[in-house]
View 1 (cartoon, rainbow, N blue to C red):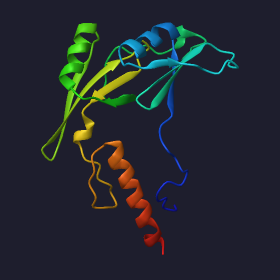
View 2: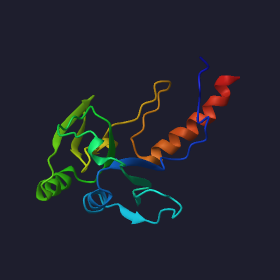
View 3: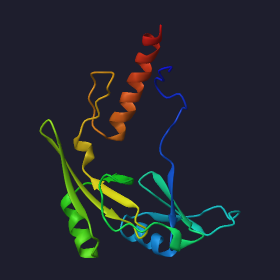
View 4: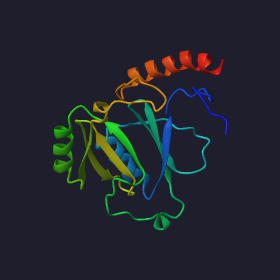
Length: 172
C-alpha cells in the first residue's frame, strides 16, 4: 500500500457532525443551553425537519429521525463508545455545571508520562456521547517524527507545515 504523506485531500478543518434526533427541539435546547452552540440558518430547500447549530468552529446538524422509536436507546455512559470531544478551560467549572443541570456524567483520567488528562462523559438527549476534557495537556507526538506538540490548533498547524516541508525531501 502506498504511504500517504501530508494532506492528500487538502483538508482544512472539521466542518460539522450530523446527528439523528428523536426530537429536534429537545436537541436544539441541549446543544444551545448545555454546550453553548447557536442556531444558524439552514438551507430552505431541504425537505426534511432539522436544525443547524454552530460553535467553537464546527457545526452540528440535527436531523429529525423518520421513526424516532427505532433509534437505539443508550443509558450506560461508556467512554469507549463513539463521541465528540471538546476542550475546556476549567474541568471543575464544567463538572459543577453538569451537576447543577442534573446531567448524569462519568469522570475518567488518563495518565501518560506524568501528564494527566481529565475527562467528563455524558449523553445528549438521544444518547450520543459528549466528552469534555483538558486534552490539550497531552502532547501530540507523530509516530514518524520527534516533534512534540500540544493538542492546540496553533501547534497542529505548525506541525502540519513542518510535515509539508519535510515530505518533499523524504520523497526525493
